[in-house]
Length: 288
Image (cartoon, rainbow, N blue to C red; front, side, top):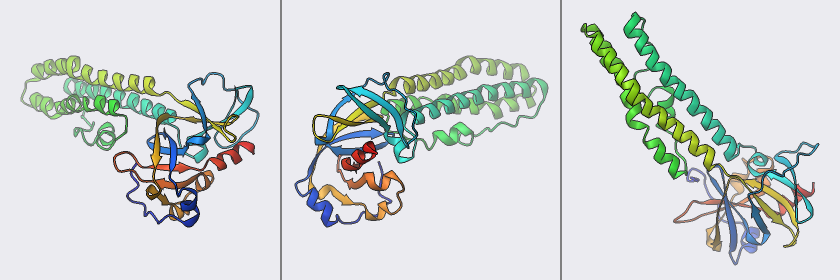
């Protein structure tokens, strides 16, 4: 998470008193942001998501309830509670985008063939950096290293497909239509298929790698109070007092639950910086 654009203020006295000895924290991911919570508040984690029961109530982020250790525990989607999309929702949106952009390139090749055969104007974008996929591709980034590796394989076939337009249309102008159509068939069977395979691989990875978990939070150390639905667990990290940065100025622009839930910015040198979640406010939300 990059917070370099946000001015970080010195820690206030109250926060420094609370964390004067530092903090051992459980860290977890929600989308591409890393969060931390006092490890003493974490009861356990679970991948059992199928037994969540819906409730006849509406509250921001409320998913339903789950039975755990003979207790009915409210389940809150952490991302939705803060007012933004969860990792699953982002993945589904990305899968749809990849489906749409795949269709674009199938239609692009069909339009080029139609232009060659029927003299229709070719109006598709020729520059691979300016088509809808190219504009997204050139700026997309994620902490998912495997997905980035898959996406890196798009570059060559995507540029190769877009290079066909001027090349084949010029061949037609030079009365070499048969050769142009032969090359188009070849590129459709080889290069386009490679590109479509990359789209399939990216979607498959997104579907298989999206594994949300439940993080059970406790107030007394033994009884589950609330379960947070999160995208991925990270690690247990020991933070020193000097790593705590106050968030007065940031909290002024946060709204709703975020302004009370997120209480400090935790600076790390070799790992992603993260945001500290105030467990007591989670308890307050659960009780309400």
